[in-house]
Image (cartoon, rainbow, N blue to C red; front, side, top):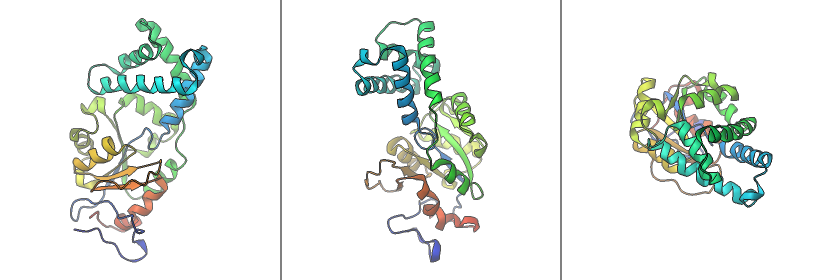
Length: 264
């Protein structure tokens, strides 16, 4: 069935509302956090550069861009091992320090070095400017929760520090769910925790493969947040937005801003 709305709340051309199960009301928006609501990449970049300057290591690793590329590689490599269950969260942080520095640090040395980075990183934490307005706009209309591949303790603390923990009824993370996105079990577990079926839930995230396609394949409505505005045509069953300010208008025809409606 083709999505259809009429009247003043019809979506703009090219902004068809997300699809869901037939006659299934949208009851919740499930959010990715890092690089969706929270500017992880910007905060991490600023934090690691401060850290390396303070440690006197920036030139040692080839200057800003080379050091950032090395840092990103270390993060991606060791975080993948964490998601695969090969490392615990603390051990993955130690491995990131060792991989980046190329040194056989003891656990205590790795903890201390990474801890100094974390202090700089956390000092740079920021929400994207469009995050709070969209959370406020949707608050009267749908339930909201977070689904993240990080740990519950880490994301709970981050949300509290950013001042938005109270916006969400639940923070659901891979460590407690036992599965990480894009596994269907991660999305299903989050929906179960909310007492909803996947067809009643919309997922919003910045990664096409992990977030949008994972959500779509698990039976959720899926919105891909493409902040770089690539203009890339999304796959079937995925809707693309370039910023969160577009989300309320995208959903206006299906949640009616106070009037009951459905995602088709």
